Structure formats: C-alpha cells, structure tokens
Length: 500
Image (cartoon, rainbow, N blue to C red):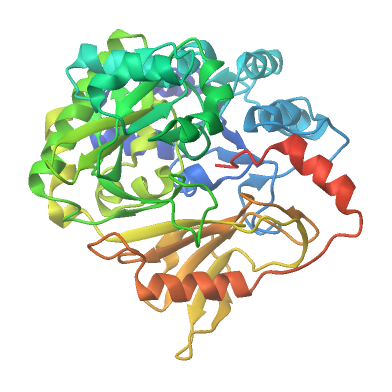
C-alpha cells in the first residue's frame, strides 16, 4: 500500500501542469526547499506566502526576528563587503547558514537558490553545499548586464534605443569626432554599474574632464544623444512558452529628498493609466520582443527593462536591462493582476523546477494589461542624502505606520508586506538601517510603500509623499561617531553599494 501511495505521488509530480490553477496548486504543495539569499528580503517580499518551503536568508534582519520565514545568521568576522555578491558569498560560507540549509534538506535535494546578485564564486559555493542556482549563469547575466551588449541585443530584437554610438573614447576631441553627429549634448554610459554612478551628462570639455578617467578606462562606452525624457520600468519573465509581461510602471528618479545621485533610481509607481495607452502598448510589445531575443541568447527567467519616453516626440526608447529580480519586483508581484493569477516570479521559479507545464502567454498578457486588473501603489527608497557620517541611535520598526491629522506618524502594527496597508493614512515601512549602524552619503535607510500615487502628473512628489517622507526621516535619530577617521575609511571601502 505504501509503495502505491509513493508511486501515485511521483506520478502527480511528473504530470504536466495545465494552466494557472495547476501552477498555484503545485507551489502550494511544493516539497523542494527554495531560498532567496540576499542582503534583505525586500525584492521578493511575500514570496513565502505563495510557495511552500520558501525561506529568506538575509544578512540584514529587517523585522527584528518577527518574520516567520526569515533566517539571519549571527555576524562573524569578515572582509569588508564591496558588493551584494560579497554578502551572499559570506553567507554561503557561514556555518549557521550551511547548517540551516542542511537541516531542511529533503534527502539529496538541498533545494534551489535565488539571488539578487551573484558571481561565479557564489555559484561554486552554492554547488558545494548542494544548492541549485535557479538563474542563468553568472557569466551570461554579467554579459547581458553590459549596457553596450544590451544595446546590441535590442538592435537584434528590433527594439529602438536613443540615437547612440558604441565606441572607445580616448579624449574630448575623440568624443566630438565619434559622436558629433548626435549634437553636442551627450549622455555617456559605461558598461556596468548603477545609473546614478555611471551615467555622465556632458555638454562641454569641462564636463568631460570630470569623468574622463572613468570614460577612457573602458574599451567601449555608450554615447547617446541627450533627450528630454521621463523614466519608466517594466518587468517580465522569459519562459519556454514565450515572454510574460507585467504592466508598465513609473520611476522615481533623482529626487534630492531621496537620493544624492543625479539620475539615481529611488522608487516606482504602478497604476492603471500609467502614461498613455499608446506608450503602454509599445512598452509591452518591445518588452516581449526583447524577451524573445533573450531566449535566443540563452537566457530564461525574470528581467526588467527601463524605458525612456521622449517628452518632445513621445517616442519610446530602451534605457537599460536588469537581468534579474529588481527593486521594482516587490511592486510588480503584489499588484492585483499578480494576485488574481500568480506573481511573475513564480514563472521564473517554474522554469527551474523539474516539471512540465503549459500556459497561454497571449491570454495572460492581455489579462494583465486590463486596467481593472491594476491597482495603484507607490514605493520610495530612502537614502541618507547628506555628505556626512553618523551613527544611528534610533530607527523606526518595519511594519505598518499610521499618520495622524497633524502629519506625525506612529507605529501601528507588525506586518511583513504592503498588502496589510488599509488606507491612505497608512503605509508600510521596511527598515534597512538599524540602530548602531553608520550612515553615509548614499546609504539605504529603508523603503516606504503606500497605496495611491506618490508623484503628480508632472512627476513631482505629491504633498502626501513629502509628509510621509519627512515623518519617517524624523523617526531616525543619529549622533556624530566618536572615531570619525576609522569610520570614514570603512565607508570608503564599502563604496556605497546598493542593498537592493
């Protein structure tokens, strides 16, 4: 009898999944341990509610031990972190993490690992402890993340980019020679890095001289004609059945109240009539074309595209590719369209599970584009914007906060993600910077998530957003550190890398 039950269970697991209801049931009954290993659990917040056996392994404990599916190991001595990859590699070598994974193993099946960022060392460490990395190889991701290569993939896919030239730049005269046909107001991007750090706006030789060392060090850079533009973002997933595309989002970019970096990403909004229908349709079309080309390049799974909307011509251009889950993923995966079917990240995981499945991508994309399937949310990523170093003595808790009539806020209740926000007078806050830590220019303090718009139609912060931002910032208290020189050296080594 026991053998018959086992055989029946195996047959059920091998049976192809037909449509969304089968996929939901498959993950609710999942027996494969799945981990998101990163600095925080922000990017896939709520994934554990959809997938049985899904756990977060995080360096930063954002929930003070109150999240039921977050494991954060005790800190042990380590080299200074230069990147999120360094954090993940540290954790994969941490005995408490290894013991935790081994303790949850189902026989030889140690499980699947998801990362925001990882490198070839991460792959080796994961393999060593028996984890399968549920993403394309680090090498392929790194190649595609190169802004120059992204441009070439777009050309093959038939997705328009801002008029540009891909070339080696030796000096300012060489820039004029190579890109003079684009005018003399350029945007120069180096192949890798956050746009707030590696995008340079150049009109004059004096402008060029500020960034000459970074530009000339590269074998090839992307030189674009400067356009008046608005930023937007869209997430999608390359599957064996085609590219599933989520709705277009706005981007919060360069707000001095949120980030010290000109052009730096600092949040997103999602709402039904985001931009015009024509722009939304183009974005979906271009994203699907790009995703289908990614499949030809050997990539499958989650990705995000930034699009630039030329406000003078209303043309839509590809900005850049992020071949991974991103800071916008939390918004995408909690919207009504995702909750009505399954979140986008589950299609990604499905591609790395040992199961066959079928979905109607055309039908799904049409359904996800309908206005009635999109509710309105916004999130802002709050950084320390001053050129100073301070030690945090008090920090607001993660959870639901409530605003009073006088504009002050109070902690209302513990919760693990934004769906618990009831109305306009509440917001979800995810704390990144905790008491005792040192803040420096560009350091992440936390993420604030609210129902409704965060920006006006003219892409300025709403008064409501400004009130919430000021109220959360007021909940942080800090003092000048005693050993300033030592802390400055540490911050210099960290380099202000993003935690998300």
